[in-house]
Image 1 (cartoon, rainbow, N blue to C red):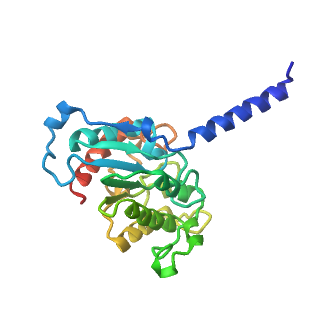
Image 2 (cartoon, rainbow, N blue to C red; image 1 turned 90 degrees about the vertical axis):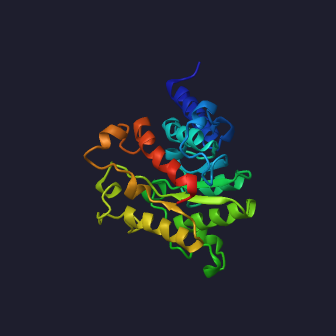
Image 3 (tube, helix red, strand yellow; image 1 turned 90 degrees about the horizontal axis):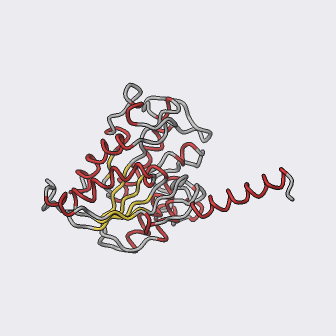
Length: 260
């Protein structure tokens, strides 16, 4: 007969086991195919990226069940098969959860790769870095992969090694409403590294500018703020609900249709 303490230890071990299993990309479980009836009505028929395969990498914002509301729009409007490798808690820094670098390593060959930035690098105080990290400018310094920027640059290089003809698109971090720094671009409140959330987003865009990667500035174009956030966010004020994803999903689909 186990004591209460022993039962608690067993439950804790099972929880850790479940977390470990969950913290892996599950592309076969996150694969959307287009609805043929919806495709016939799409206004994007004939666009440059119509009928392509899309792989998505990111944190929970890219893979939680609510995010399917957006990716379903991509699939139906773009006649696209959408496969998500994202894992909750992931960031670009190599040490941030099952990082986006690791997700990219596991991915196959697709026509389009979407790098969807999370809030995890900022909220977990991973170094922001600069656009020079893990590039020819620093001799592809492996130590730079511990920064957000080093992770972004690693992913861009790795994906183009997998498919040199692939289109890579970048979605900046979305807003979060747990603190003013998460939604006010003029906030001067830094994380423990001394950088603001806005500085992390500007660094994301700088990395993409270095390699000519088109960027969807979701933070600026999201259309959500402290006045309407409750309509589009879950109670945690970090993750969006399905209405939020449907709102940005149309913007994302339009961006992905032509890559601009």
